[in-house]
Amino acid sequence: MKKIAILGSTGSIGTQALEVIRKLANDFTVTALAAGNNCEILVEQIKEFKPEYVSVKSDKNTEILRKLFPNLKIFTNGIVDIAKEIDYDLILICVTGISGLFPTIEAIKRGKTIALANKETLVSAGDIVMPMLKEYGAQIIPVDSEHSAIFQCSSDGKFVKNLIITASGGPFLHKTKEEIKNATKAQALAHPKWNMGSKITVDSATLMNKGLEVIEAHHLFQKDYENIKVVIHPQSIVHSAIEFDDGSVLAQMGLPSMHLPIQYALTYPKRIEGIKSNSFNIAQIGKLEFFEPDYEKFPSLLLAFEAGKIGGTAPAILNAANEEAVYAFLNDEIKLSDISCVTNKVLSKISIVASPSLEEILYADKKARFLAKEFIKELRLN
Image (cartoon, rainbow, N blue to C red; front, side, top):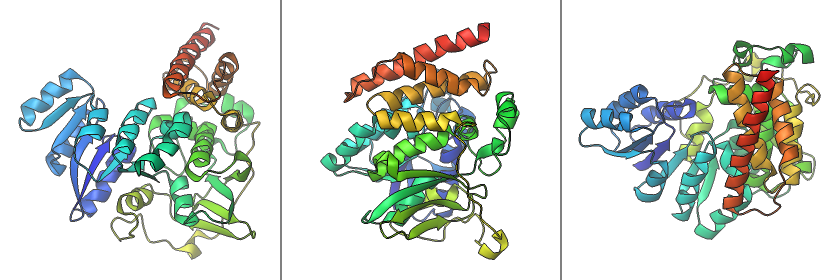
């Protein structure tokens, strides 16, 4: 049986991963679970999957777990400890934020296989992380549906000219700029196709999520930004595609469900029945539509392309500023359209380090968050 550690087990990807594992009980044993503050869900996961190790963020939750599970080995805020110290065959990293970078690095140093569903790792530090994979003999298997699709299509990566990343367009695809500007939190969170956490759902509404995926794809598949295309595809059936040098295109298709890319990452290189989101009936789908993205309506996507091309600390700054702005929007502090404005202002105010160390990336992240919060205060005052 394959031993798996899941960092972010109570979030959207983590809970769906455990649903996949529930169907594959003879193939996996859950050796560790890490959660933030959602102790109630974690308790139920511990009862069912019986991990040997867990990590929670607070001392309070640690005490709760110790009383309920006296034999459980508990880390307080120990996602790095889990990645660094315990025995596992595969680690699924689906925590949000820059904190996902550190356990990823520790798992790489151990030559482990990493199912990665944390955008910040490659967006902020792809130039550091990717060479480490070769140095330590580790492997990253992408979990995001778009990168999973490219991974499934590209094989050895030979003769691939362009990567084609699809986007549903989110809830505001057919809305005007004015409607987007005045959109409510409820409207932004009403994604028409995907069930995701609130932060990623807002990023999907602004198309920043797609911009971050472009930066990830640049690192994962070693393609120039000129060779990465974004296409709006409202049906979310084609999860992404690759174009070969001869002009032929290979696409990965399926119903919109994260269960399938999660399962593929966990069972790779095998394909097994496991959990299915429903049988795929191409005749019932009827038609597939594709459009060019509107960069004027969705400036965050253009910002991400620009930051990626600049490179260095620019993507880390972009990511940090956007994250702070998204949380401000979710807290009803700013408008949806303010997210890209805050991100753009922060990018324009911080000097870019071309070939940064990890410490310089972390400093850029910290500085970007500080500036973003200052700009958010100004918007609130006005």
